[in-house]
Amino acid sequence: MDYKVADINLADFGRTEIQLAEHEMPGLMAMRERYGDSKPLAGAKIAGSLHMTIQTAVLIETLVALGAEVRWASCNIFSTQDHAAAAVAVGPEGTVDAPAGVPVFAWKGETLEEYWWCTQQILRWPDGAFANMILDDGGDATLLVHLGVEAEKTGIAPVPATATSTEQRIIFEVLQQSLTESGDRWTQIAGEIKGVTEETTTGVHRLYEMMKEGSLLFPAINVNDSVTKSKFDNKYGCRHSLIDGINRATDVLIGGKVAVVCGYGDVGKGCAESLRGQGARVVVTEIDPICALQAAMDGYQVSTLESILPQADIIITATGNKNVVTADQMSRMKHNAIIGNIGHFDNEIDMAGLEAWDGVTRKNVKPQVDLFTFPAGNAVIILSEGRLMNLGNATGHPSFVMSNSFTNQVLAQIELYTKLEDYPVGVYVLPKHLDEEVARLHLGALGVELTELSEEQADYLGVSVAGPYKPEQYRY
Ligand code: NAI
Image (cartoon, rainbow, N blue to C red; front, side, top):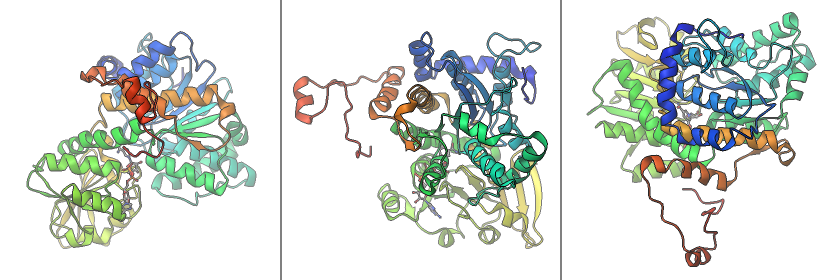
């Protein structure tokens, strides 16, 4: 079996943590129970590009239990948990000497070149076959295939028009090499792919853009906008993992500090709540009047980054946008201000501008924590080189919330793979009854007692006793 991980000997540790996580992931375990015999994913060859964590290991092994063949890479250079990667490669039945799990290509601290090499590995099977499904987080695997097709047509690897991160610039070289040296058939790869299920806001944004310009090559399910994903993972997941990342990276007392959260979408809402929970004085920045008003009515000061800059101790970006914190602003912040990004790509904070700042010096404090000192002597602490710090400095979201997200992923893979004829090229969300089902699967573990509608009440509301309970336009 081909694979590349940091240390295969970490598999035992990984397996123990996977077993603990299974207990906390009732949705995924219910999928195994429900579909383990019928194996609806038999024949599916899934290329997965999603943070290679313990929780993802439970997802991968669920896909396998449902009949899929899987190859996996991480969707960020810092987010892999090496023991999880090792355990997935070894598999529940294999040994360190004879791994028998899933081919994983992921380790914590990949270079960008290694990152894109890993992404390439998930699309090809050793027997010459190609992936026929993509499970993506942030859209890099999908992007690579689309750019590959363009490169094959023109003979020249395109630099993505939407180049939003340093990673993407490396694709040019990878594709150029793939065309000249490996003779990759990107058109064939794209032709084999039935569809993609996309995990996050930023990846979904890319899919809608591709659809708008008519370049999307296969159907996609937007998993992010299942209510049980974005209103849970993005919010409650970040509420947990944001401060975990700050604590592990810096161990500063958060209470009393002025913490700025840029963006008050689902992620920003969770971040602001967790910082307030620690006693920080939280200030929100927003460009959308609706979200700004929400933040104000939730009791936060809403300001611009520029006007709060002299007071800010901790600055967190959660926008999915670019250049939200500029190098010039970093040069004028309080000494040792902590700057972290929890959005998907590393361009929310202008890292390129910071690194190129005249006379700035960089001192690595420890992995994923760097001190940048300006010529005047003031410094800023940068988490995870501006990449998502909850996965770079900590271990991402905990199992229970990821069980909700990943149950949606499994349902989306089954939906696309088994009912492809219902999904012409386009971007779709899962039907509401499945969203409600995902939530239902997680109630028991929390001891929730759900009230049941009577027939009379259901008739009065105009819904069925078994749901769905809300119209499509309902916003939760
Ligand atoms: P969202 O669209 O709900 O929220 C983003 C908010 O940022 C919006 O309200 C928007 O108006 C605001 N915004 C945009 N530009 C801004 C600017 N220049 N200044 C201030 N505010 C600005 O998106 P969501 O779901 O909150 O996701 C945000 C990012 O986090 C995305 O990149 C997403 O992929 C990522 N994400 C990361 C996770 C993690 O574990 N690190 C988990 C889930 C999502």
